[in-house]
Image (spheres, rainbow, N blue to C red):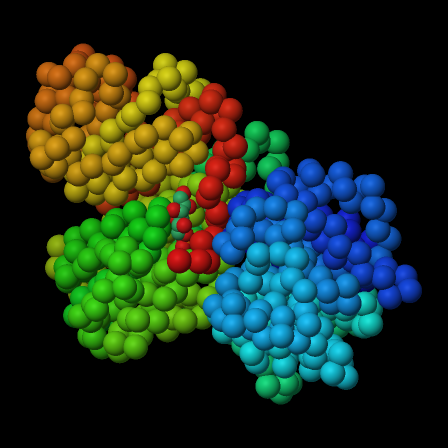
Length: 610
Ligand code: F6R
């Protein structure tokens, strides 16, 4: 949600800012703008409601040649999407871009108005531009003026500030919203996320909460909100630019679906001993004592990551054999959960920035829990709030609908379960066999991906349906939820995922000949029961799309309308394979319907508000 880019250096700032904003489009936005410092203390602001192409048109007319500026994509929270509410917000002397929410902006706005400021937008952000300007008018330099203004605001922010009187610097600050600084040669960058500036540098500095950065052409200085200098070494980002681009695929989502074998390989690489099949806990990022001592495990997440959490619950129960439960982070944080120091919390988040998950982590920590996170974005807020981090090495995920990060999360949770079994010496769990099977998984995934055309044909046959049901039992239940979520979020078709055992308690009433029902029925201990569900669907003339294991289920094939198979694997790994056809079916249906696959309406990649 909301994307920020900042640039200072020898190149035309408007071009770098626009290119960076395009790479942040996936975060979700409804308007965009840039502020560029020009010759003779000029501060030019160009803002447009709608897609970046509208801003691009206005920028080509504006001909801004300045070399310093900030840019923004806005996802409306306070004030409708409009040109006036788009960022940057400027007083004529100061321009501000902001990601986050200023909670006390009403009170601050009233104070600014009493001091003669006139507001031209409905946003919370504009108040910050006025506060900084008032400090400048009072005689402060830009950096002290920003510090003084920030001392008054409450809430979350990542901001970028430029001022006409100080054309040699950009001031940025971060509190609970993401911000990364990029170090170049004679030029420096700021952005909400790494891909925006990855083409220019791999040397990145991550700000901590409550820190301020000052960017000049010569370098970057970091300080606390109290103005105390902070020393911070840059980190080298391993992601390649190609990973953050479409590479010939029609959509990022399709590319990311096809990247899954590589994402799994990278996520498991170096985390097991290929000779002994032992999990290397240090390399995985987990603490052996924490695994040994945990009385129970609580897995917290939102959306697709919550489906991974459900899978993780099964992994902990089946492999570690201690109590485990997956919880929606938004529910957990707003209840009065009874948890304590004996509980290990596993927070799962691709972005590492989802507000509800972050807040749930804080609630758990306040109750004394130890926190392990599973995250994809290096040094993001949730890993920083954790004791230990298992990173998924899926690379940047740009499509709003999560695909490769989901299966990478499952791989990480599988390894976590195996690590728990190993550390606790759980009898009956063969960790070496678990490791050997996951090593084979990328090859099996590739063989499913090769059949994309088969799923495209199926999409043609079903794209006109208005409702879908997805049924699964046991380990296939999270996959049913995930398959339904993928379809609904990118194709806007109503789809529900259900635990198949619940079908008789309600959803069965929906079934008729217009209702395709995706039945997840791999070879496992639930086979007889799920077969019963299939027959109940057929008895009501529902259309059955069955998804099973190769060489299995031949007895039901004749009564299925569609029969999809995936290679046989270890039961615990089946969800990593069965989800792939579901991702492809959702993708192809959405593509046929012509929706905005990578940026579905109303959705943001990173949900940093409640
Ligand atoms: C759906 C999707 C979302 C995210 C959710 C949590 O495809 O991607 O449901 O899973 O917003 O995001 P993270 O994992 O970044 O915490």
